[in-house]
Every structure is written in C-alpha cells, then in structure tokens.
Image 1: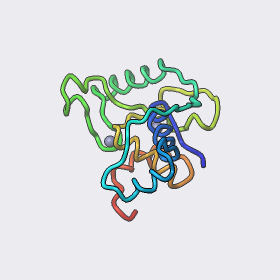
Image 2 (image 1 turned 30 degrees about the vertical axis):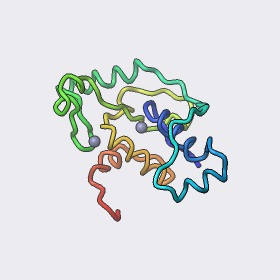
Image 3 (image 1 turned 90 degrees about the vertical axis):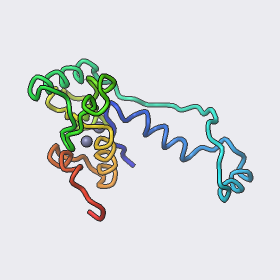
Image 4 (image 1 turned 180 degrees about the vertical axis):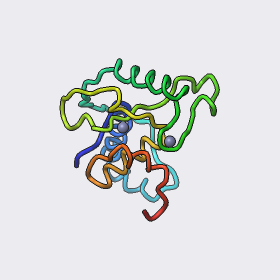
Length: 151
Ligand SMILES: [Zn+2]
Ligand SMILES: [Zn+2]
C-alpha cells in the first residue's frame, strides 16, 4: 500500500504501523490480553525509518511567505490558529503539507507547493489520501474540514 507522506508525517505513521504489527509479548500472553481490560504498553521496540530527504529551508520560506501574505499562520482548511489558541506556545507553529507527496520521487519543489495545515486537518488529509489511494488536490485538501460523517 502506498503511504502518502510529507515532512511531518513520517514519525507517527511508521510508529503506528510498527506498533500495529509488532508485539513484544509472547503470542499466548497476547491472546489473553486481547480480552483483558488493559494491555501492556511502553515496551521498547526498534523502529526503522526510510525517510525522504527534504529541505527544511523550503518549509521555513513557505511559512514566511504565508505570514507575509496573511499576517499570521493558520490552517488553510479550518482556519485554526495555534497562537490564538495556545498563546506564546503556539507562536510560529503550523504544519506544512506537500501537495505533491515526496513518495512520488525527487523533484523540484517551490514554497507554493506547500500548504499550511493544523495537525488535525493534516492527519485527515493523509487519511483521506490513503482512503482514496491517490493524492488530493490543494482544493480537496482545503475541503477536508468540510467533510461530514458518511461522505
Ligand atoms: Zn485545520
Ligand atoms: Zn502532509
């Protein structure tokens, strides 16, 4: 299955897939745990990443351009503004999503190929891409905040 990754999604997707497929608990114990009200977490596991090289400066420039244009950073899908919600903790925070995913191989990327998304919308865009088995256009990504149950 193709996974649509960009700069800030590598960690949680690989870690999530790994935790779903790996058990540090012997299989008999794992079977007993399946029906138990609690389970073991926190085991140390080795996670191997194959990450795509990306240019941190590109993300920084994209954020600077967005701030110059709009005066602040906010999610292009739902409008969430981390600084408005979290004060100084949220200052300068937003995630940058590659409209054309890096999984499609090396290529020239411009700052306008990135869009600003909050963590929720960013994850939902990637879930939607995995659900559809293709990338989303910029407009489809912006529309992610308008999806409702059953659509
Ligand atoms: Zn959002
Ligand atoms: Zn992304």
